[in-house]
Each structure stands twice: as C-alpha cells, then as structure tokens.
Length: 220
Image (tube, rainbow, N blue to C red):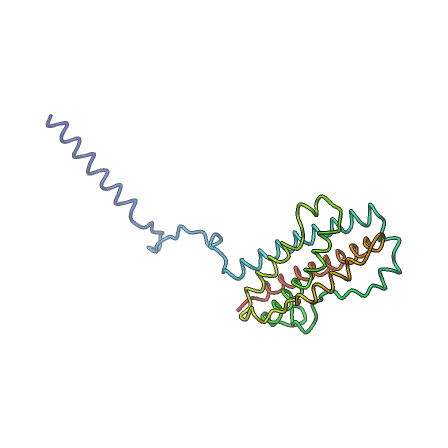
C-alpha cells in the first residue's frame, strides 16, 4: 500500500510540472516570448475589408451583365452587328464617373470619389428595373441586377463621412425615365437593352478600377 501511495504522489507531482510548463510562455534563444499568431491571419481594417468586398461584388455584377449583353443580345440576336447607326444616335443619359469626382488616377479625394460612384450606381435604378421587367432571360429573372447594385451603392455610401450628400434620382425623374424606356417596342426595345447593359458593364469596370486604386493608394 505504501508503494502504491508513493506512486500516486509521484504521478501527481509529474502532472503538476507538466501543467505548469504548458501554461508558461515559450521562449526563444533570446529569451523573448514567441507569438503564436500568424501576422498574415490578422483581420484587415474594416474599410479595406469593405472595399475588397465591393470589388468582388462589382466583378460579379459586371460579369452577369456582360453575360446578358454579349450572349443574349450580341450572339443570339446579332444586335451588335446590325444597329450601328441606332446605337450611335441614342439620347439616353447614363451616369458617369468624371474627373470632377477626383477618383484615381485623376485625383484622390476619397469622400468625393465614393460619393460619385454611389450616386452613379443609384442612378441606374430605372434602367435596371426596366431590364428586369422587359428582358426575357431565365438568368435575369433569378438574379436581377438592381438589387445587388443597390447593395453596392449603399455600402459605398455608408463609407463616406456624409452619407446624406450622396445624390439619388428623384421619384419624378425615375418615373419620367421609366416612361421613356417603356415606350420602346419591338426591335428598339432590344436595342435599349443593349445600350443599358453595355454602359452598365463599362461603368462597373471603371468602378472596379477606381476601388482598386483607393485600396492601393491607402485610406488614411
């Protein structure tokens, strides 16, 4: 019994030493504590994470619109080849990112730049809702462009210091534009689809380049 008791005491002491060792910091040859955290695993600052998410969403929207534009209209309906004159004479006023927005590479005013991009995205509402209502495509029905575009616009707007200054089209402007679009019928309607999707793809591509520029330049 005495031998058994001595064994138990020895095991208890050994476990105590092991537990103390595991709780102590691991030291390297210099005596400094080793950090177990991988620096590359640290989360990015919130704004940079948001910007990268915006790039991913903008790419998704650009690719979806490009698929509708090129496959459905150019390849299946040959609109791209047969309507050069009509396409060049359209009077639709699409939103633009201009030098006044001071986005890279034309400047670096993050407040004005984000305000300009988000305002432009909001201005696509009537155009994209028109696409959603009149474009016959299973892909478009299951994944309408406007909802995700609105999400992207809202995210960029929320990153500005003064979100209330972001310009949104008035209901009257939206209604007038929607009426103008819905007057188009037949072949002209397909041409309008082409114009909207083409411009939207170009705007989204410029949005991607601009946000990448903001990330590269730095936020602070």
